[in-house]
Length: 247
Image (cartoon, rainbow, N blue to C red; front, side, top):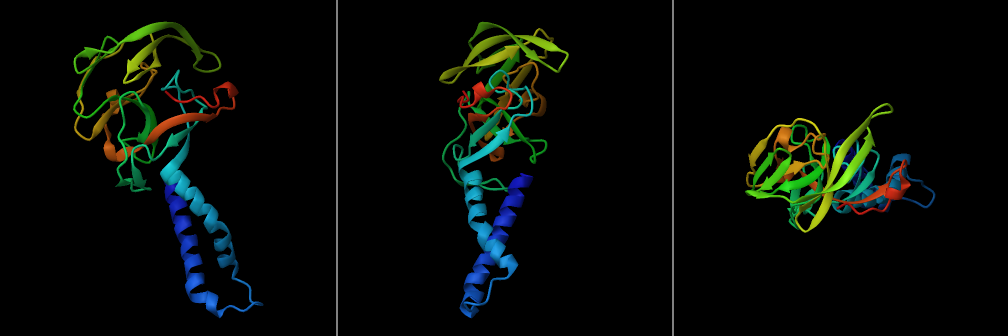
């Protein structure tokens, strides 16, 4: 959000300088008189800033995955593109919806402003929709009283750091129209029960035992939505992941 605020401010200021030059100064110029250096820079950078601002605000925004809470779908180091107009066009920084287009569907991976600190963006999977009753008991997910199907794929090993390797079980879980992978560890866990309020969503990480999500900090308000995760466009450590659609 800080970068968005800076980009919006700089774009507005350079645009204002260009408009001032066009309205008040253009008629007074002579062929031999050069623009002031500030006006010259503003006229050079404004079109580029405006293009970046429009694309980043209303179309696609890049994000870097900072942790392993969405493994194995997303891993730390993935750079992803987020579809900004999937949940409606929103005024930058203030996140006020201008044009409603769509809402999150169950099973989608979405980006949102962290409810406890909206300056931070989080990425999780949509598990609970407004009005849903969600239970997570003995590592089994229930939605409106119905057990969510999951099938075992096998063991999944990953590095915690340079010295530790974690072992989990990978399952295919089906939410909505398609399946996705989740990780379950042999760790003790609490049981949870939620009633999702109107205008809110329940988010969970795919790495179920290693994710700070709605089970910890509550629901995601609709006004905090950023966009739908779309594709991995870069990963320096694992180039084979580039181009993978996020499901």
